[in-house]
Image 1 (cartoon, rainbow, N blue to C red):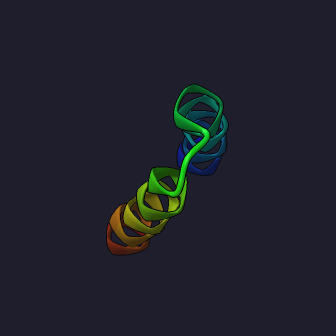
Image 2: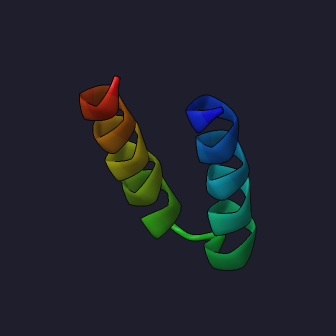
Image 3: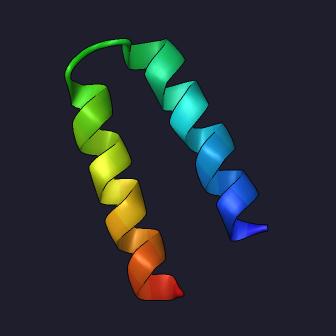
Length: 37
């Protein structure tokens, strides 16, 4: 479920920001979930 949540969160963040920050957010998300797994 964590993967699905991260994907949805990434899409939502991307739609809301739609800026270079999106790349940073995705990077942070992947790092956080990598540590979780």
